[in-house]
Picture 1 (spheres, rainbow, N blue to C red):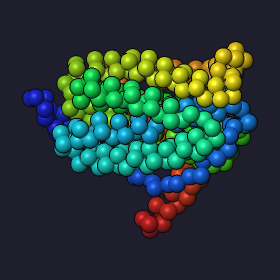
Picture 2: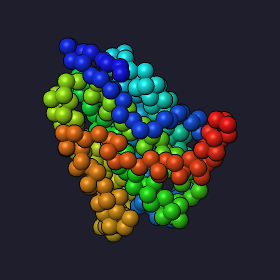
Picture 3: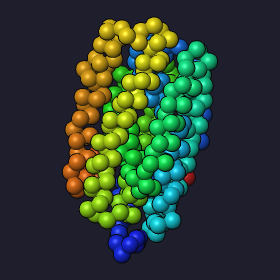
Amino acid sequence: MSAAKEADHDVSSQSGSELVFATRNRQFQAGERRHWYNGDPVVTAYFNALSAMFPVGERFFCDTVRYQKHKITDPKLQGEIREFLGQEAIHSREHQAYNDCIAAQGYPMWKLERRSARMQKLARVLMPKKAQLGQTVALEHFTAVLADHLLRERDTFAEHASPEEYELWMWHAVEETEHKAVAFDVLKAVTRPGTFYFLRVRSLLMATIFFNINLFLHIRNLLAVERMQWSPRAWGRLAHYLWINPGPLRKSIPAYLDWFKPSFHPWQHDNRELVAEWKTAHGEETAHAATAA
């Protein structure tokens, strides 16, 4: 059993991850179709607004984990950090390429990315390093619960999304699921138990507020290109998608609230079967079995 020590605080069993995972150097041709989600400009804007946050956001995540990496002595968690950094770097690259394609269609992705960068810069300037990691952990919880919903509703998503966009978002959802506990485990390893709970609760509350403000402004900017930014019908359509059918936000409420349990760990939401199904469909399990043989 490995242990990390900071300020006389020993942490054992640092990794709580349930999956062995690795970086995939995937490339996509996504973002070339204007309204790729079933011809729907509103739902497409929602996903594009999320994507606008990812390039700078993923770099922030990597930096906050990297700041604490030297304090981790558990070889298992060190290996997971390495793959986490690799996966997030590829996510940043591929979503930047996606965003550039969306921008080429006349959408102000540069404005959205600049807004996200300003918010990240404020976090870097105003927050201590552990608080920055707390923001990463909270936002990783967001992505994990949304990824879980996307993977569970993949057949519905496949019916509505263009093939390249489907592959991009499913791949991202799988990898967010695979590494969903890494930043959490790092923060837990370098923080005293009482401080850890307070920090992660505060971080989720802050992230909930600022993430949703940012997302709303991003969507509004994208809908402005369609002259729909003040359309009650457009916002009603978005509310219907998010809260009713398929309702990712409504369905994610229990998982979101589990965060506030003192004993919470991301792998208490055990969805390894969703990753296994995707890997089997993409030949990864077969390739692994052949290598092992």
